[in-house]
Image (tube, rainbow, N blue to C red; front, top):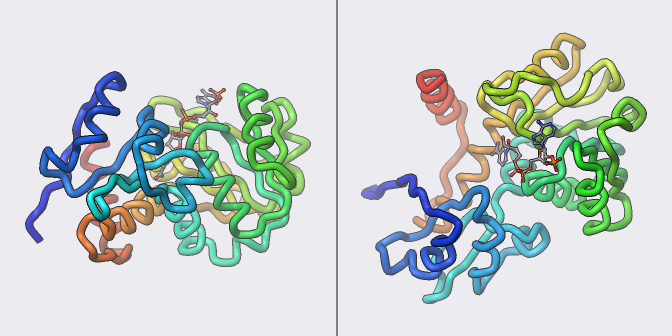
Length: 248
Ligand code: NAP
């Protein structure tokens, strides 16, 4: 297949004009990241259900001459858990660490899969409460000071803060607060094993790293642009892991 996937540095002030005309620059579509996901949502004339519910678009393409937008982070998040921790959705309580854009996608995914009690904990408690109010019944917002209490019966933990990324080796939650059958997942993937995952593994908990989310969110985006759905295979993962090791 002849094609290229190129990084473009577009300033916030220029993004809307760029997003409205990317087809004229020869692009079949693109992925969009912070801080452009909300503007991408706004310029999309057609949106998938996940984008509609989350209020953010990470994938753009042209459909019948119109700009279309999807949120494939939701699929990536769920497919990664299905792949690495099948049965994870038997958890009754899920604890989401962080209340930004990725947390929004994660909470929507958890609701879609029927998790009954979703607790969002955030450094800025108001943002956690706002996100909980957005989704309504079954979702609650908390400050990080409540972590010990709200983690005690959590069957699933999702870190959607940047804590644990290479530059910040801090831990967003002490896994000693968790029950012994909890599954701990991270969305950070550099490093692959964050301090949270290492400490959780040390306690004997099941862990899921963030690389699978990245791979699985990319597959449906590729399908929108080229009409071919790539498979996320162990070989693909190994190739990306070796790239990450080279960068690190
Ligand atoms: P965002 O909208 O900027 O939200 C960041 C969240 O993290 C906010 O809730 C923020 O709290 C919290 N936070 C930031 N720094 C913190 C710190 N030092 N201590 C405590 N809390 C802190 O970002 P996002 O788009 O949601 O992305 C969050 C993370 O998700 C990223 O770091 C990325 O690694 C990961 N992610 C991974 C994938 C994947 O494919 N694997 C996809 C998307 C995102 P406040 O509200 O208090 O500021």
